[in-house]
Amino acid sequence: MSFISYLINGISLGSVYAIIALGYTMVYGIAKMLNFAHGDVIMIGAYVVLMAMTSAGLPAYAAVLIAVVFCTLLGMLIERVAYKPLRNAASPLAVLITAIGVSYLLQNIALLIFGANTKSFTSVVPILPVVLADGNLTITGETIMTIAACIVIMIGLTVFIKKSKSGQAMLAVSEDRGAAQLMGINVNKTIALTFAIGSALAAIAGVLLCSAYPTLTPYTGAMPGIKAFVAAVFGGIGSIPGAMIGGILLGVIEIFGKAYISSQMADAIVFGVLIIVLLVKPAGILGKNIQEKV
Image (spheres, rainbow, N blue to C red):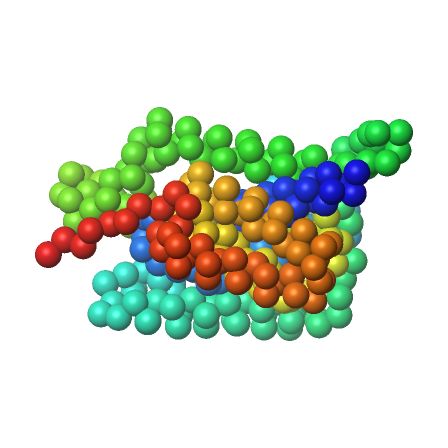
């Protein structure tokens, strides 16, 4: 029964990675930028919820809504101030260094405002745990909510991109930015929308992560952010189903690694698996090998 329990916990953790990875994969797929500040938006979202619930006394659903709106605006601000001026930069390194700079900036702002002490996070999930197999298997409300949220977000995003006008604009910009602009698509607005959606998902992921693992520091988002990036690469960066598959596989590998091999080695196992996958299939599980136009 412990195997099933570990598997469910792995899928739950993997669902959080998948939600974060969707933000990475959308921004990279459309803007061709790696937003390494994405992990810190998770942390900001969790702090907004914590402050809204403890200081303002708001109910959980209102606090989450405020966090989603705040992180959406934050993502658009980061894109406007830090990334937009570098869109046509000669070297991709400029964007990468800026992203790392924004990441450290957000961490240090959080340190200044909230301090370095670990804060206890109150779960926002109202669902009661489900007890199965005569009490041998307990599925927490956080696990149920996380997996359900991941599935709903995945379906919602897929429908949005395939059926909506803005989603079609995103596809066009990801294929050929210049041609999309000639067709009358507002590229700046499309990229800003992509950052907005990614940051809103980061806020949701932060709330779910801190509800399941109820501690919060200014560095909370750093490692999940890196692991979600690994999940996006694992599944095939630029692919929405790939991000979900990569995230869930990564979560399962991490939990099984902690349970059956070594809790200290779990992160090393995750990154080791990534190296093996990239050696065998460099584009990731669902990634496409793109021929460079000459």
